[in-house]
Length: 61
Image (cartoon, rainbow, N blue to C red; front, side, top):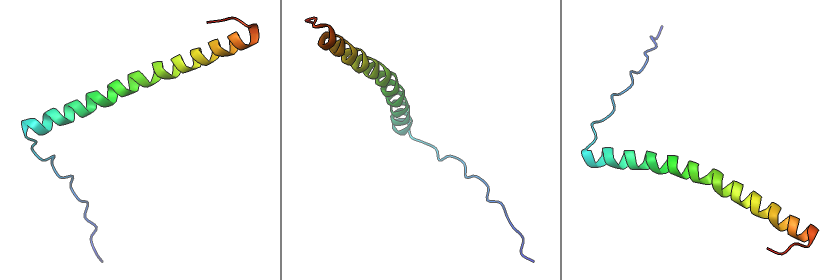
């Protein structure tokens, strides 16, 4: 009967200061992009509703 062995997780390789900084910047970039995506969507929706209102009511911008 064969024994089943669990593989141990390899420890994370030591990163150079440059690599650590790159990872930190990538994480920060991701977070900032997420924060920006919501306002853009909300702005587009508001802008679209405003345009629709002007079309229906004949209001000029």
